[in-house]
Length: 288
Ligand code: SAM
Image (cartoon, rainbow, N blue to C red; front, side, top):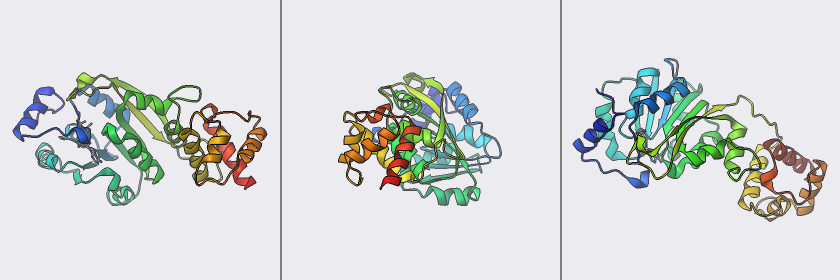
């Protein structure tokens, strides 16, 4: 079958199936073979790999993955795309299509079934309306993953990569950097999609760390502190943590811990590195 990553072929298949593009599912189909190749190169897909694709759409990237990987499991929410995928992927015996919401799939079981629990690679042109929940679910559920290579909104890719002292720095930056090494590998303009999204896009690769770069006694507490800090970004860190529901620390507890770290009592969360959040979590854990 001719590559779908060319506008004419994508339009033809959409028209043939009278498919209505669903904005609510973030459907922007990739139509640029150069970008598709770049994503394959960044993900370094080989015949050893089992790949999970999120949102295969009409199967454009799935074809590229099926050519290169040993096995592909593609999870698509829109049931109207299933007959299209059955047609565009008919030539590939190594692809399983799962008609489900990715946030409802038990990914640990899927990895167990498809790859005997060994780490998989996740590759996707993500639906932008749920980018953060998808990434957080992959990490927080401890799905065995080697790397995640994804197309996201440019601004979200920036947020994953930055450190303290920039406006984009936040809970997503810290969570991603705790679990993985982020690298932006391509910038992708709106004209590479049908329909064109209203924002620029970027491909980012997140390579999972075997061990997090920061060791903490209580990972749950670390993330609760990070959430508290950025939920009330304008407040001092001590006030944000003292005000957070579910955290048992007073303003004085936090100020005392900050003092041990030689940080000013009025510091804001956005000034702390991941390592400093780790230290704070350990000081508070031991003081409680
Ligand atoms: N991979 C295709 C491509 O590159 O042309 C389509 C990418 S499009 C940006 C996002 C895809 O994710 C759509 O096919 C959409 O239907 C699907 N999708 C949206 N929400 C989803 C969810 N919760 N679970 C699984 N798939 C979802």
